Image (tube, rainbow, N blue to C red; front, side):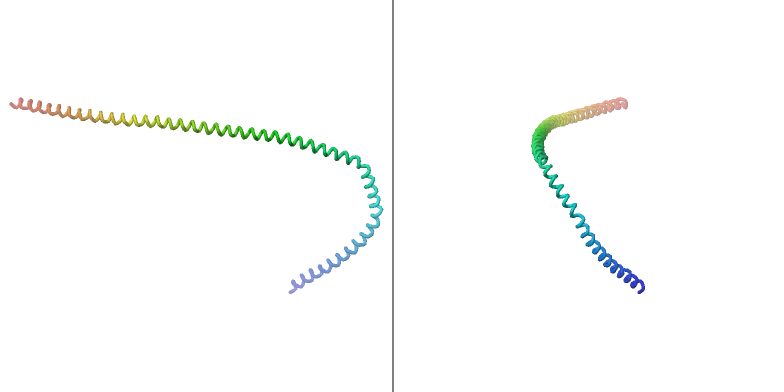
Length: 172
């Protein structure tokens, strides 16, 4: 409980001191405000006089400044319009070049596609011709093999007959 009491006393007394200081500051501010107001009055009057004099002396320059501002504004608008036209021309040219490039790329893509299709047709024809030729060669080879087999069989039979005859002649 001693710690709670300590904080209560600490913060409780701080609140009271803060209220007292605030009240003192408020009183001090009021007093000094009134003093400053009285002392500033002649300064304010002189500042107003100087302001009037400055306005009178600045009036011709103000007119010139307005004229200059109008002139500068006109020149700025002209410069802006010139830049705007040039930028617009540049953008238009860029769009044209982009369209030309796209057209060129599309044309080349079509030409390439056509060439690929033509090459595909040629290759297909060559492959088909090669397949036909391969079938013809296979058929020819098969026929020749059959003929060779028949010829070999016939020669084998003749050789067998001749061997048989030779064996018969030797045995007789």
